Length: 452
Image 1 (cartoon, rainbow, N blue to C red):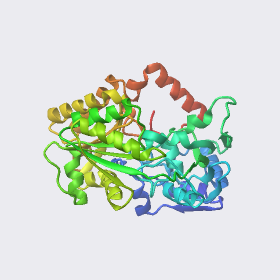
Image 2: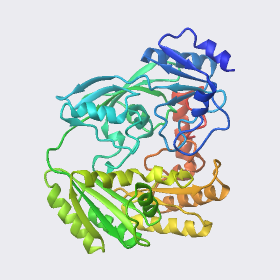
Image 3: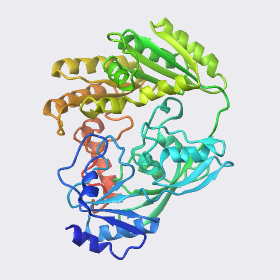
């Protein structure tokens, strides 16, 4: 099959093709902990947008399933490839076409690394706000396709808030530009926003125009607050937003995750049941806001340490970013991603503890506490997720929905959560979204088996 499919792409220039066993085996997984039953048929790496168009035109004609892939940093199984599929590796589309100081925007190809764009923007006094934990190797196209979040969502929102315009190759090879480079624009339906978070199921994002922000010259303050339990930590975080503060970062590490992360980064071990909250303020009132938030933490039983920008602040951020590798050091990890209203975060932690006790599992959790987005991690041994873990995950998802929340705040649906999607959307909306998918991808070749 690989040889037959390879011949179909033989006439396309600016294209690398690989069907070596090692290359294909690596594409059976992403960072979700999931792995497909068999490797894909082929991986193709286009060097130009025109090559992407030609690949999809061939795939459309011959009904070949195509899996778009960026850095492979996804956490929902959205870029995992299976038997008979062709992986469209967009990593070679890595050019930054323009950085405009006047318009505060950048035009980039989909394969540009998030951190590379930010570094280039900073040379012009600007920066790129989306800040996923995988920013040093995740791509802009992948960030947009999953509507990635990150540590700075509290103040700057998810990737959606930073996208102005997209160039998208449709399933039949047509190239369509969606959105606009102007600050405002309401012409017709907003297909640009529809493509953001569509996980490669509606089209292949090849280029994007994204917003940049001016670098703020004011000091950045970072705080750590240690709490005796997750209830007090949750209430303190809710108090921060309830009192009108919008910190750049507000992260909660619960009592199950904290000792594992501390051990991994060689930090002092916490006390029993101790939780950690990390907060960062920036802007003209950063110091005043840090003082006010510190007082709130103290009034809710927290022990507060405040530090200016520097080595200690960087260590605190590194501690939070070490969540995933710290969990991986304990075994196999199923990383989940539910979000609830801010006022229900404490209740969601209580539900997690109940599920932990009922199933005899460890479920370490971190939260983007300013927006109610929690990341419970299921730890187990082996490559296959055990049935009891899936049952526990199902209970966790339903708990989030019952609290007015959602299955996923930023990771996407992919393979991991499609089983529960209809429960959140309801049958009418679920079917409506499936019909939208058919309009964009009538032959069902784009990232089959994902989301729907």
